[in-house]
Image (cartoon, rainbow, N blue to C red; front, side, top):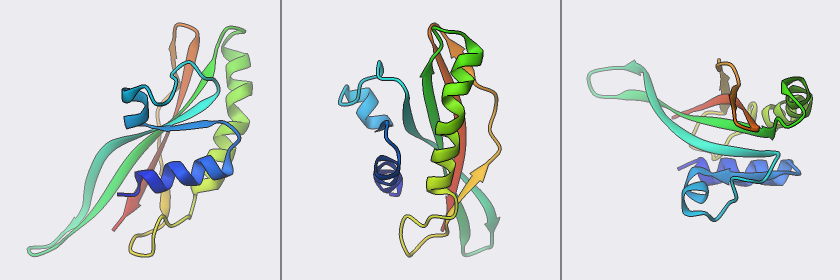
Length: 127
């Protein structure tokens, strides 16, 4: 699975905490650290299918998490460069030789919860 490779790539390229979903669930990574990027598997799509074969795209959400204690505008200012660095680190990168490069997908609006803001970035990888 590409998730550990995605996490390792981001840890290598970013100066903030990067955590896989399993690390967050087990407590191995702190949900209180900010800023950080959480890597969460969101499923797959089947963009092409024939009788005996299918092309599958695996999808992940990268949640760029920042504190909002100083307000939404400050949160967006903090997150903006992190979003750009995250996308630059992954766009076109191949986790392994057997799969297509990472592609960026359309994502929704940020989620504001308590003192946090989560900026979703959606990526996919084809086989």
